[in-house]
Length: 142
Image 1: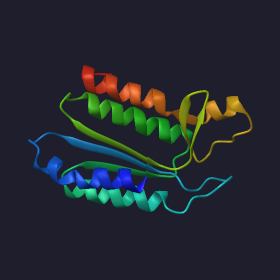
Image 2: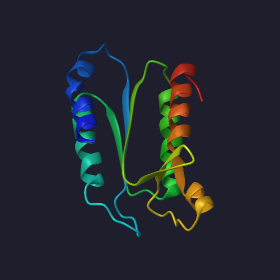
Image 3: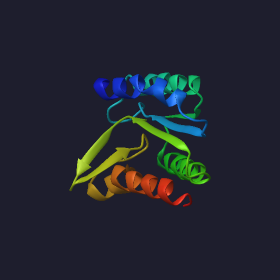
Image 4: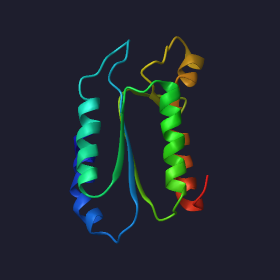
């Protein structure tokens, strides 16, 4: 994780020098899980948000969203990205995730995970998220 974060941060000066284009970022920090709280996701999301804002990104940092707020934030982010196909967008997530049946899921803080179906119902599929982001950026609309 630190290596990936370093790679992102080390490339930020090149992004700042890029031609003027809209830059938006959605950063999610999930820490307050009832089943296993985590110490650093909020700080990580805020720290990266400040770095991105410093180089011209419009940043939205959301701390500990429940499932509905998480979904809503992603839908709003898709909408913003789709307004201009040249928009440079960053999605960042820090929190619990799980892989099951070759599907990776981001877990919302209010997820009540009792079985496979409740996991599906209370999480955001990374596979779907990446697919939708790629389609949004290619099509210019969603």
